[in-house]
Image (cartoon, rainbow, N blue to C red; front, side, top):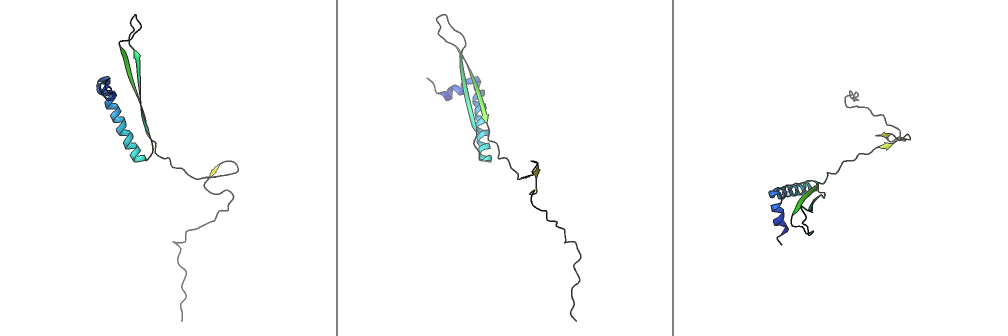
Length: 115
């Protein structure tokens, strides 16, 4: 029996091998950039093309199905407080708000001069 790799090269006149190679390269690049896992699955389906009167099969159809699952980048999360009504809030609902004002543009107070 010939090696499976030789069969893949022949399947669909080499287009399956080229597509698998491209998928694998994309998977490797994405794993490298995201630091997360992914997968490439090859499913080979073999079905009889015809049957003889004796029930034996001498011709088959072979279909290759590729499934590429690229890793997804980590999604950023954000923090919110929940109010008593279940609404989101950036401020703690049971904490008083401190009123701040910008004093950088204010005129400095007169300085005390010694006599």
